[in-house]
Image (cartoon, rainbow, N blue to C red; front, top):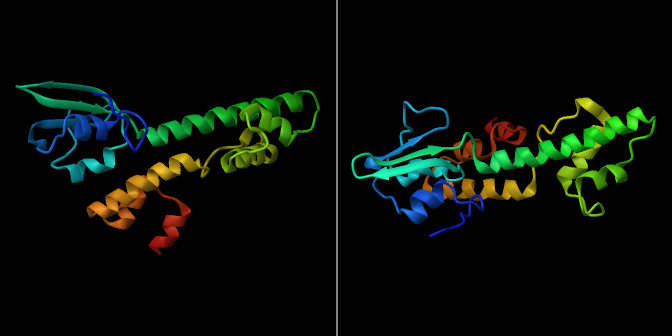
Length: 188
């Protein structure tokens, strides 16, 4: 049975353990974070597993003797995929910036938009921010604190589900969204 998770659109930890294997007893399940094969995560229930729902399953095995052994990806699919999208677009814009500089040509936002989007007339907010940063900062431009709406919606869905399941709202937001300025202001 192949399923697609609501948390990532991929077959992730939620799909493998909850939807496909319907695990309710975690006493015979060992889940390891990427790169740590010595100490499994402390997962005693679905509540404990919930923050890891959007992590991809790097490998999994199951046997009568060993139970289920799962190795998760380094970071959530949502975070890694968003980072890949942003990195690629930023590099394309920097390449265009270098081209302009080399040819003593002004950085043109419309031409830059053509480099990163098929719909140059309907750029997403994150694309506009990236173009603006490269125009202003050139090679020093970063994608720090820029987020893509699609991935933000997936984070929000997990956060809302965690809060509904009983997680402290601030802890759930920090887990899903990280240390952002908005959250730091909420803490004060």
